[in-house]
Length: 355
Image (cartoon, rainbow, N blue to C red; front, side, top):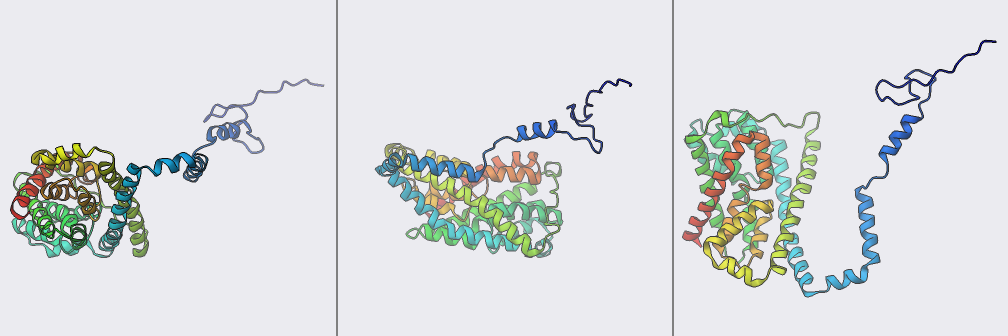
């Protein structure tokens, strides 16, 4: 009888683990066990929510005591008021923006604009007044305009004016400032002025190598209904998140920051304008909702609030990222500072005349 020595298990070329040969009839228990061990136990959203609810139940006495303090009650009052007032306008703006993005062909805009760039800039700027949409939607629409051959100067004017002077935004501003109707006219005039100025500035000083031709971002393989509801879901979650952050920031400023500090900041005309302009960039609130946040900052002047409303829809953190992704980093690095400075100047000049 011949004695044979059992061969050691082969190692897989891909993983180097014993017991896996890749041939039929051979089992590989070691690799699945390792993969199972690597997967392990992970935290997901339902689990995190369950853990949070359990913690609230366990510490409900302390939570109830913390929420009953005057500071937290003031915070919750401002937060809920801002969200409840702004949410209907945000949803309506998202619905109209998705409808325009999906059902209106980009070629329509190219045919409607004059061929001369100097005239196309103000026409594109005014077109933003009749095409509702937030700034999240204006960036891809402006990219589609450039792809269709529209002069970049006109596309820039539309990019800046559409989220700032459309009917939904102006109506929300009127509701947020019922005792100051001049804020609606001031926001319209300042935003349109800045949009046209930036368009003409690009026509004068812009270079083609600064602007990357945007890639096509259509909804391939989807019906118009699927693309519409997909756009609505994405924009509601995206813009709604920034609305919540903005409401939280406004509530914190009102309830936590000492009133003396806010009075000192608001009492300096230059610093108050700069402070709210920077706040608009950092908060990145959707333009359909930012008027309610501005109205809640009662310590600041109307001119400072107007600067907040002009800067926010034109340049903030999320817009900078979207503009860099659509038109290139070189464009965004030049476009953002110029827009920020002109938006502040436009808000201050318009406020000095109208407010």
